[in-house]
Image 1 (cartoon, rainbow, N blue to C red):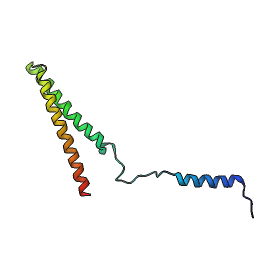
Image 2 (cartoon, rainbow, N blue to C red):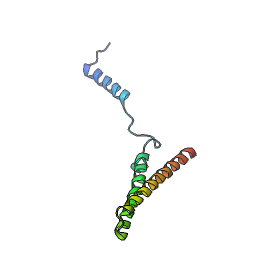
Image 3 (cartoon, rainbow, N blue to C red):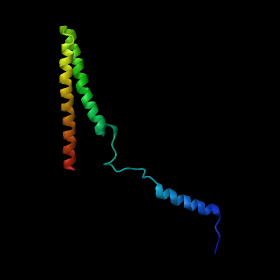
Image 4 (spheres, rainbow, N blue to C red):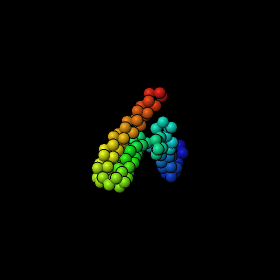
Length: 101
């Protein structure tokens, strides 16, 4: 019976422990999301862009026809509707992609 140095057994035990708790370095292609594919970021961007563009349009109407604040309020309301429509459209596409896979 051969006595192995304590260093050797410690290294073996350490390597075994590292192997047991190792986290996989790569993920499967389905689970990894790039920034543009992340649904939360995409939905937020779609909603914000609808509201922001409509509000800019409302400010332009107010300045052109001097109807402050009515153009902005009407455009803001339409922007919220447009934002929700965009969110609905994105989520519908995502659902259709999930069904086809």
